[in-house]
Amino acid sequence: MIAINYVPTEKQRLFHASKANEVLYGGAAGGGKTKGLIMDAFFRCMTYPNTTAVIFRRTYQELKDTDIKEALESYPPEVARYIAGNYEFRLVNGSKILFRHCENVADKNKYRGIEIQFLYFDELTSFEQEIYDFLKTRLRAKKSLGVVPIVRSASNPGDIGHSWVKKMFVDAGPYMSIQTQEIYSEALHKTKKVRTQYIPSLAIENPWITDDYIFELEQKPEALRNALLNGDWNSFEGQCFKEFVDDKEHYMDRLWTHVIEPFDIPDEWPRYFSFDWGYSDPFACQWWAMDYQGRAYLYKEWYGCVPRKADTGIELTPQQIMEGILAREEDEATRNIRIYRVADPSIFDRSHGESIADKMAPGFYGRQKGVVFDPADNTRLAGKMEVHERLRFDEKGRPMMYIFNTCSDWIRTVPNLPYCQRNKGNRKHEDIDTDAEDHDYDATRYFLMEHPLKAKKKEKKVPKPFSPLD
Image (spheres, one colour):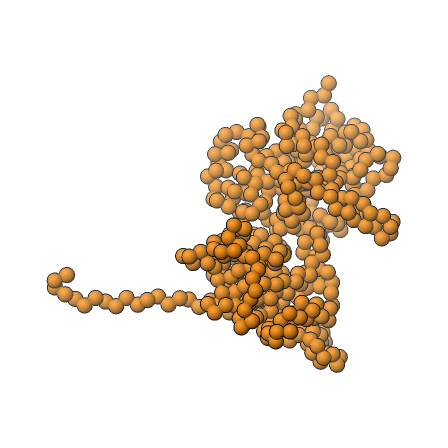
């Protein structure tokens, strides 16, 4: 009889038993996510001989400190032998469990030739979706193995992948439910159903966690406490725009919320357009209006991103984007509403011939239609502070910037941007992490830097004349 050091919690049992192709076991710290991940790989590899499971973490140091350590404490040595030099366990039935890292996007290419049956990610939000999608292409299984390849992940909220992970798993549908999507193969001329599931974890559900650990989490700052204790995906440590509020109860009265219900914008309000260029990365087109008090309204957006693939551009040419912009402005054009435009300064670069701005302008190759931009002010930290200032509520609960609830990509990406965790060239800790999905944010920054908020003048207090009777 071989003793296994593992008694799964109810959520861990559900994680192991899930019939979905891709599962995220996520949320609060201390919910037993890493333990569940490690043991899931062990059980699958023991059940199916000669299979391979690969557990990914961002760095090898993290693997050593958490995943490998957990595996060494949990796997029975009678059936699982650890090969330290290879960072892998070899099981008695010929299966292997590999521990690998992918610190940068380029590192994914190290695994081009590997065949994986069971793919695992620990702290999925620390990875870009590009890494996740590429490693999924390594999933394959010979029919003789009798297995269906799967992906299993665990993660707390936060980090550079927060936005895409939240969209793919947390916001996809009710918690615990299996969501189904059909994908089509042009090569096979077949459709296939892909199922995903989000299983939330909480520390208080783990009987092996001590009361002291819960007390410690409760003493953390609010954002960190909400993320680690409550598994709140709308609040996390390192979140840049913590002041953002999306309150459906106030969409109509527009109080204490930044997201509001669309309304008919008066024709006389000035209109603006801001643009962040992208080809392999998403582009961001934003249409703004400004009321008489200088309050900005994002009323329309076009975000050039592949559906279900965060931070992946749809690869349109400058002319195609120009045509798409004009098609989306037919309503303004019929009402003779003029739109002033600013754009990413990089599109004016002519060092290699005609610039992107040139290719979108009227007259290019004799074309009559086009769009004309002014280069935006790309000062990063000043632009970031303009976003903060606009998001700040006054004493009546009104901010200086509203977002129509139809602008779903802005709502998905901008509030979930994290701070830069380390200096990157000229990027400072006070700046957002440019490895995150920041294209809508950049377009917003360009617009706001054209209309900076002026500091309110304080009323001068007139000194009271001296009186000996006072």
